[in-house]
Image (cartoon, rainbow, N blue to C red; front, side, top):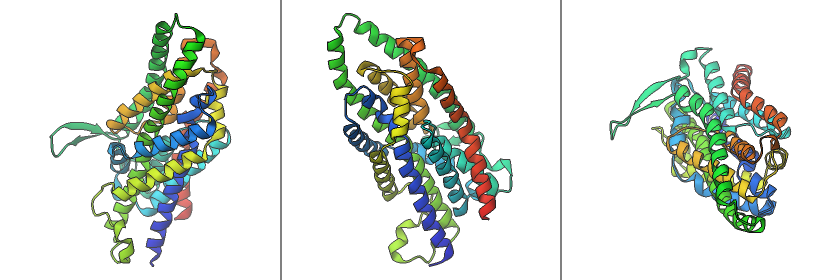
Length: 359
């Protein structure tokens, strides 16, 4: 077995480790509200989220294609590039998990990929695809690709949408249930929140599992074109990927690994989102989860690698603001926002330095 093939297998394991960490790092996104409102026990919520994650991961590949071929010039991506990108993302995810900060695994992955690719191109900024038009070969439809359209714009708009839509949805619900008895409200929305938590878990799997699928597809495509897989044993023949595509086994593997990570849980971040930021009841949890999951479903269909963390956190903020503006712990929100702002620059720098050190 050649050293290049060994490195490839190591990289695939590291990518799956990132997916597992993404599962427990972002578990809070799907179940923090349903746990904090005591609609489900933590283990029941984890089982629901893991199952919904698994289903969501099979739903599409638009985001995977954006991550794998729409952000950087893949001519400058090697197996080592992807290894360094994943290591940078893993370090940041574990650091923010340790401090209980709900940072974005998606942006950690994107930042790591950009930083490592920049390092492999010796600092040539042209390897980063800022903006480009993409023409659909079948329909002739023109769409815009690149970091600006698929990362920067959604990074700004999705948190704003989460806050605004969460605020509006909660306001509408307040109006609809204004004459209901408190016991009736809690009983009805306790049941509805189970549905919304499953919907949120589906949105998380749909949005986040695809990102790792795209990285694995890019890794295999790069290794195949570099000749690393030319003479592999027949048992590893399934790794050959002469064209950039997401194979069925990649979808299955990523879905299972993310579901396993979700089952492991991320209690530090669950505590931050579900208990520290704003006190919620089932009606608030239902509004926040429904808002965030809908945004993730729409942006995932459009191929935008939107942050699950940003979306659910700002939805919770919007719901809390509709309840009472000062019900939100704004000092905690400030810490969370700083983690968001720093994610892409820090992971880019980490991956850049790791690449330079290892090579």
